[in-house]
Image (cartoon, rainbow, N blue to C red; front, side, top):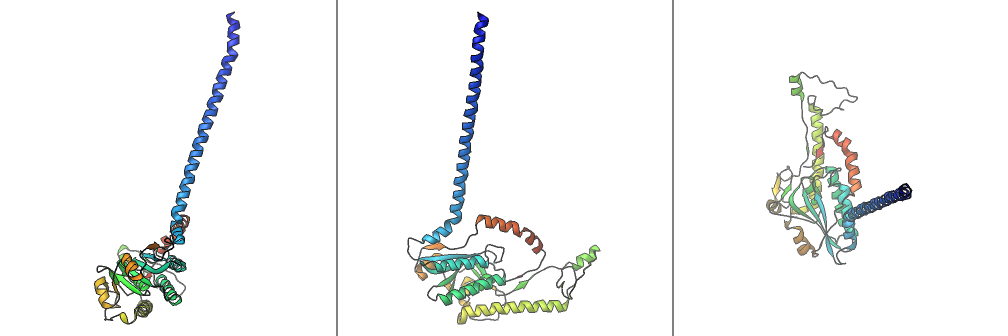
Amino acid sequence: MENQQEKELKPNWERDVIEKLALAAVTEQTRARRWSVFFKSLMFVYLIALFVVAMYPKLKQDMGVDGKGHTAVIDVVGVIAENKDATAENIIESLRNAVKDKNTKGIILHANSPGGSPVQSSYVYDEIRKIKKDHPDLPIYAVVSDICASGCYYIASASDKIFVNQASLVGSIGVLMDGFGFVDIMEKMGVERRLLTAGAHKAMLDPFSPPKEEETRYMQGLLDQVHQQFIGAVKAGRGDRLKETPEMFSGLVWTGEEGVKLGIADAFGSDDYVAREIIGAEELVDFTREERLLDRLAGKLGATFGQAIGSFSQGLSLR
């Protein structure tokens, strides 16, 4: 009798175990799907947030400020160079976007830069002059915070007026090319320089070879040419407001207070002051172009090799 009961209970026991295992598997799968949906939803929200942050400046520009007139602000901040934040491409595109906006009543170039590439600076200078010619009723003002020197001042000189703080640093109208010479160190260390070139001046200003007077003279001539271009641009932009002195184009910098006296700046004022009191549109809208995240990452990766090579070369700069 007992054996018969055991035979009847055994199949039920196995079925119960199988059902429990199946139920546990289904429960686990359901839990896994829920977590999968949760993480996918979280990732989706994260990507949407990134998109909104990336597009916010553009959306803000497109919407304007409640349809009212505003002052466009464009940053000229940091070193002015092709692989930096303050590139001619970024600044020019920002200017063009500000001009296209029908609610823009004036443009402020927020300047805080020690300078940089004369080529990049010249590109922006020419664009500002073109905008002023095509849109004579749209004022463009440069407002200096800490420093507006060399290439930055090159750009600012194209604006209608330059506003500074009394303690700002402005000027440095000059050009430089720097490098190093290792000839004496190599001699002391017993290192012999072996250099082959095709072209008499291909290794001009090579830091491991003695300088040649002819080549030094030639490079000085190039610097003088660029300097004269810089001076010409400043004179064209500032006109008779400049009170020229022998030191004005020597590369010296001045405080904002002294700069106003010399005519390299016009008056004192901040972004808010210029927007409110000079332009008459106190709402500030940032039109500074910001690279997309993927473009920025790609640029950094793509520039790594070039930066490694470029670190050994000499550069011409307005700073």
